[in-house]
Amino acid sequence: MNFDDYENYDDSLHDRIHLLPAWFCERMLAHDGKYVFLLEGGISVTLTRIQRIHQDNASRVWLDVTLMPYAEAEAHLCAGGLQNRPFVAATDKHRNATVSASSIMVAYEMGAVAAPEAAATPSQP
Image (cartoon, helix red, strand yellow):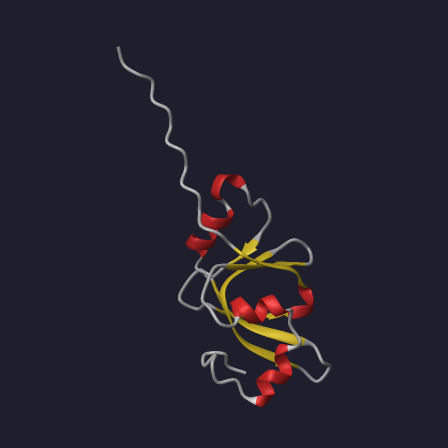
């Protein structure tokens, strides 16, 4: 299933949308952004979009995603040491990956990176 034509879902796509939480459909399928899947075991998968939904013969749901570039993921997740667990991101131009939906414990959208506060400079006499 390809979600590039968000306005033109076909019947088979509608059959699969119910397999995911509503928030996935609202944001991650329709809009490029900065998203994170927290997987069982504590690994974070950083992505910019869900591209396709697949269901295999055993009824497992798989998501084809576009990974976030590593530098961008590091800037968002590691700013100020907030992220101390491993994360998955793209390290080169190959940004496609497939994730098992059953492994996703939390999905969220990242906010903007906060600018570091200006260091206080002592006044000079």
